[in-house]
Image 1 (tube, one colour):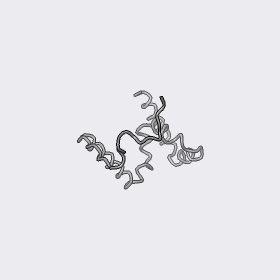
Image 2 (cartoon, helix red, strand yellow):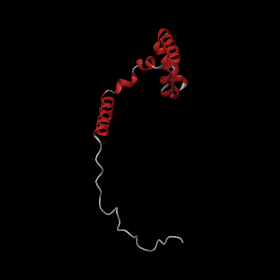
Image 3 (cartoon, rainbow, N blue to C red):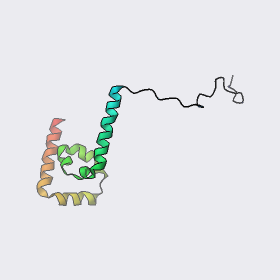
Image 4 (tube, one colour):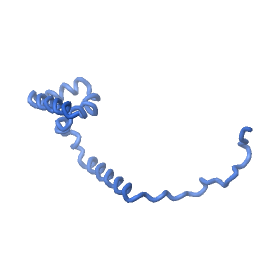
Length: 101
């Protein structure tokens, strides 16, 4: 038997009054505060993402998150700005990164 939609609901409308949110656990609240602190730091220090040191920290992750979204012209300009020594340094870091995984 199909439900009838022209009849009133069996219970009063539960959305007619606001319901308070359940309280968060202390651990969950601490996690949210930490995330908010990190987000605020990144918003205040926008140059954080412009640092070339991120590539050297984990080259494979840098390739996956950043380089694949760059155009070939942007990649070429980045390589020229770094210079040959920094390119070699990045490649040696990539070899170490491959060895770790």
